[in-house]
Length: 331
Ligand SMILES: [Zn+2]
Image (cartoon, rainbow, N blue to C red; front, side, top):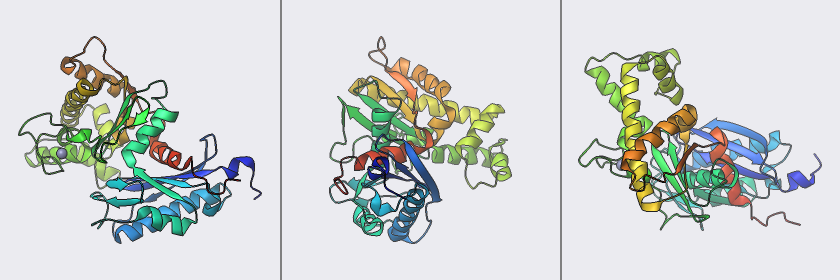
């Protein structure tokens, strides 16, 4: 295929999740030319993950009529602690056998033949919403990604705030001292009440105590191994008591935790994304806003609370922005 002005400036974006990898190829105006999805490998460690990422991106590029090496660059949103300068990732606990540091950026650059830029997954998703999505009208934004865990990203006065690399961990804001055990090992974190993994564990304990729920029936019917966002949504629709109580508790925790962050930062808008956030949509963003109110010190001026508008591909689209200033192939 003849390279056109559009495809010459095409970039790749990869979102590395705990269960799946999303890849996109976008043009100079950030329109999606092609996408691909693959499961995250469950064994084989970082090298297997890198190979799968390269495979997904190659598939997306070829669907767009391009080889990966023809791309201006590729951005990756990764969990864990990311060193953006070197492209290394460490402490990626949701990924298989990811002990110590791994040079994800250099490994991918070699396989793809184009520059690769690595950023924190939640921060790049927040950047995506800020530059292209629901948060476009605002200068200061808190992104809250409500999924398996609860991640946070910050834009303050138009610029990403990453602290010393560990900022934005809104899931571990304490909403109850000595409260429920969190996946991080501490107690009372917002994520211990609102994260999908914690909610699932809570539902299992209720079942073990003899409480009836359709949650796990739905899971088996759909041949799933975990309670996905759509299973929670369906159980709520059917007015399942356990699902309703657990989600109500999650929304109260999100209200308290996000309001506490707001009391500190006073951002203009909160964008709710992630698997559950996107699935539940604006009615639940409105419920979170309502639960925030009693905890807001400045309750006369609450922030706007909106659903992420880039949807499931928001993480990959946000990651593609990392490669926007790449000079590779520039002529
Ligand atoms: Zn925690």
